[in-house]
Amino acid sequence: MEATPLNLCNLPPWAIASRHFNRHPKPLEIQGVRRANRLLFERLDLLESTAERGALFHDYMDVTFQLHQWESQETARGRKSLKNSYLRFLRGWMFDSNALEGAVLKGWVESRLGLHPSFHREPIEDIHSEAYFLYTVDRMKGAARTSALDAQFDVLYEFTQYELQRRHPGETHFTLYRGINDFDEQRILETFGKNRHLVRLNNLASFTTDFERAWEFGSRVLETEVPLPKIFFRGDLLPSSLLKGEGEVMVFGGEYEVKVLIGG
Image (cartoon, rainbow, N blue to C red; front, side, top):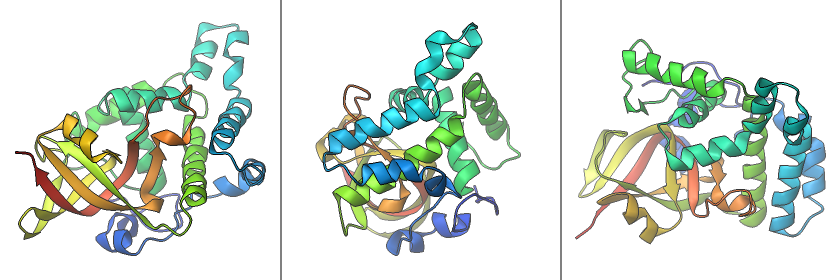
């Protein structure tokens, strides 16, 4: 699917999705998020411990979006809307990226970056297809009874970018791996040689930092260089008491040059 001409980023969707962006990445900024939450980042600047920064981020989200107040809500709907925080959707994605939580996260990428999903339960050819309609139904169902969920994802992405730059100063790319059994969720755009391709990844896709772990998810492994700005979230950025997702990396899609490794 092609990108929409509109988004809420400082760069157009076609640029973000391109192979040229991956080779020469630029910072991505969601309109107004860093400025509106400057107090969070000023406090993070004062902390040296990664664990303390992760805990501070969650506490900030807890207070800003009143996630801790679900027990005081008088109605079941009110309690559920606050319990359905960003953590529920991260956990849901890690369990099944084609469930309702996955549709909501793909929808956030679509609304902020302008990148349409190319797969949700089945390939999505265009926005007029039945598959796209069913994806939007899942997206609406998943987002029901939530509280400012897109705004929570906005802050999560900005925190991820801050933390990655803090932990890896000067780094522009990360070598990541994705286990697959086929190419249903990717479109092969070009072939460069044996096992090297240009593919179009779904607008949000899971990778891992652990080469060995990638083989647990398929008979083939995609190896690629992911630019730092296209990492939405990495599992080790939050305390393990909140989220057990170490090694998991959620990546914005588009055109990627990949090496396909085939197990013996």
